[in-house]
Amino acid sequence: MTLLDTLIRPDRYPRSSRYDPAWLLSLDMGPHPLWLLEDLAQNLDLRPGMKVLDLGSGKGATSVFLAREYGVQVVASDWWIGADEASAVFAEAGVSDRVAAVHAEAHALPFEQNTFDAIVSIDAFEYFGTADGYLPYLAQFLRPGGQLGIATPGMTREVRELGAIPPHIKELVGWEAIAWHTAEWWRFQWEITDLVTVTSARLQQDGWRDWLLWAEACADYRPDGRTSNQPVIDMLTTDGGEFLSFALITARKN
Image (tube, rainbow, N blue to C red; front, side, top):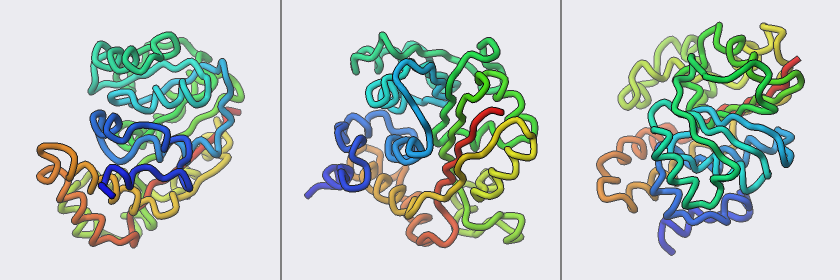
């Protein structure tokens, strides 16, 4: 069995297991995006014909997944990846009629109010969504009753509570780990606004193991994979689930 084979896990991720691991690795920008999205989607009610914003869509794997698996119309918005590059991925995947690429910064989104039935963000929200004023900004783009769901690196305890970023985490990501929060931090951060009702807030079960498995596959598959992924492997191996996971949060707009 190769490391690519270990990325096919129909027992835990049946939808994601239908996708070619090599294709996913070619679009790699972080932890396995489809595992995160498939897990998160258990707490969302995504139905055919809905209009969904994939915020921080990267090279487009999650947008392809949303269109194919749930029959939704997707707007794939990213700041780091240009619309032309993402559109090429959507064309190759045969979903150009259901996915539109937009190049936009998360604080300057070019949409009208009440545009989307749902907004999802996979392994991106930590870069732009932790400020106190961001949820009120983002919620304006959701229709009443619209859904919001994020999967973002999370901690079992708040860094503030720990008093410092654990050394094995700080060595790799530095100060950025202060944006990695517990699920309950996110619940409070969102519900205190009275703009949304949080429908689920949880840490992904064994999220650090999924992340490690993906990092090991990236290290084996990509030409430069060992150089770029070994520090991630070392961090996760040292952590062993003591602090690291992913926070999966869903809510409905009031």
